[in-house]
Length: 117
Length: 111
Image: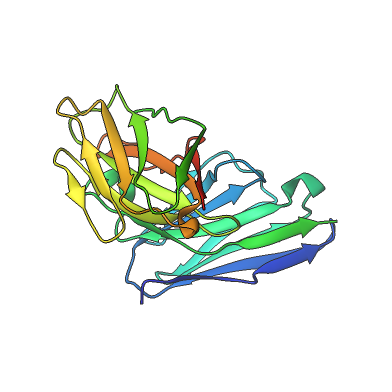
């Protein structure tokens, strides 16, 4: 199984809603990542988890709250979002954190297309 | 982290080889060259990576120059399904642990 599964595939939420994005992998990977991608732009890193600990937060607003409850699961909790937060949210995983420099590739999910109204 | 430079777009005829260049003149000795691609509305897909030697897998070949300052991704027989944005990314043990995407090259394979 070389899949990273993201749910839901599409999400429409109001600015006062609370919702969560879910990401799962069963490859035994110990590093997981959240990216945000706006239309016609490259993915932008948001968070990095290594061994279930938050290792990097790229100055993401607090209305985005990541959680890694176990080594297979990564959540992104959303609250009080703005319309400009509408984007494709991508989850990725790798065997180890990429800073170990051992030639480790990342596997990406298909993303959640989020629309904030 | 070493930066990369790629042409914004390229065309290739179906069935021909697609050669995608990447410059990474500031690469350090322990940094790898990675290639990913993103087909429209999908998540990025790993293609290949290398350190010093040329590499080949079932998807592509990676040619790295001897001074490691540039590389070329080769898709030997491009198909319409290879139309995508191709990202060349450099990282290694000196990296901050961030897989950072540049603007990439949009490859259009034409019939």
